[in-house]
Image (cartoon, rainbow, N blue to C red; front, side, top):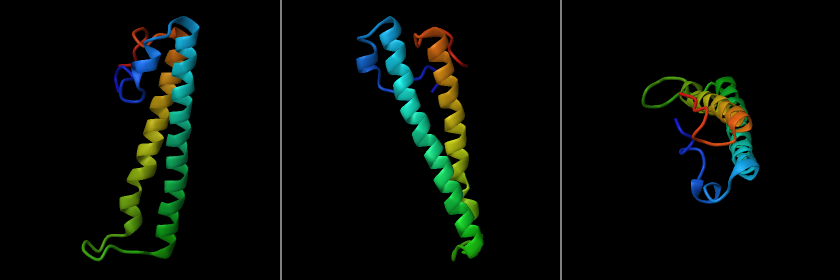
Length: 101
């Protein structure tokens, strides 16, 4: 994730340069960002539903919604990372410049 390799495939991107490369990076990152936001939103709604229903795990006797809170947390953190990547791509346009460490 440090150099953006985890969140996009570089095969097509490496064939481009300049503004076209930045546009493809931003487009791919926006698509991933929307996906992570929807993951956050709908998994949070599902966790809220589980909390309301009061479902409890049979084996651990712990409320089910607690387990499912990992999904919205992950979606939220991934959304933040995508926002960082969009800002970097708009500012620098090249994945080797302005790395977020």
